[in-house]
Image (cartoon, rainbow, N blue to C red; front, side, top):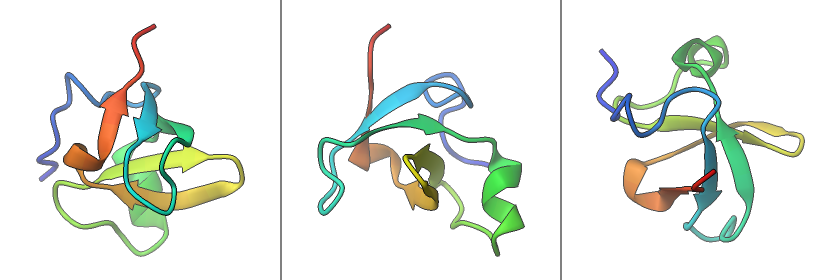
Length: 68
């Protein structure tokens, strides 16, 4: 069960992180499978990759979509 808004946070969507200590970083939404490969992420969390940090996840309210 993936609870995050699939329309807003589709894999490949560019996002900006609003949560410290990563505030201002820009990343890309990964597929849910990517999160589970590393032991899983909480239900409703969005897997985000940026730079060489590929194992991070954030809650929806910690992300904003970058308008293309």
